[in-house]
Length: 88
Image 1 (tube, rainbow, N blue to C red):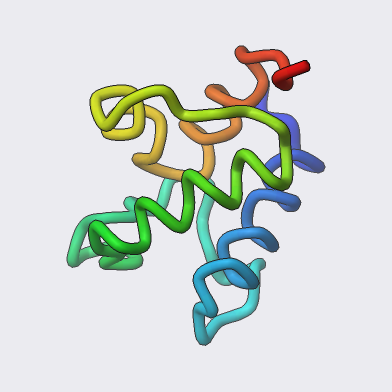
Image 2 (tube, helix red, strand yellow; image 1 turned 60 degrees about the vertical axis):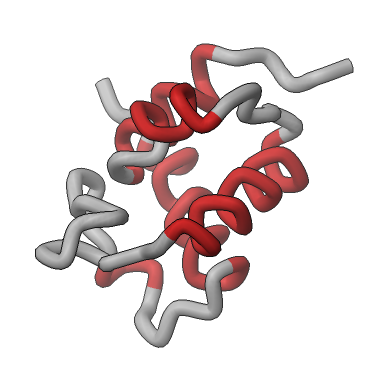
């Protein structure tokens, strides 16, 4: 079951951290982040996203492999953040 508050916070983080020219509510929970059919983010955005997730939620991304599966959409980021406790 999606955590709508967490998804909203992730969308707000995406817009502010990546300086997207759209409102958070325009991003669908399953919109592909790195696909040309979605937000079309690039590798620099992926690095900025990893930093933003760490700053916002206290959850680090240990490797590019983890990021590839965790950063597919808002829902996959929510699953990753929800499944990993903040670093102490």
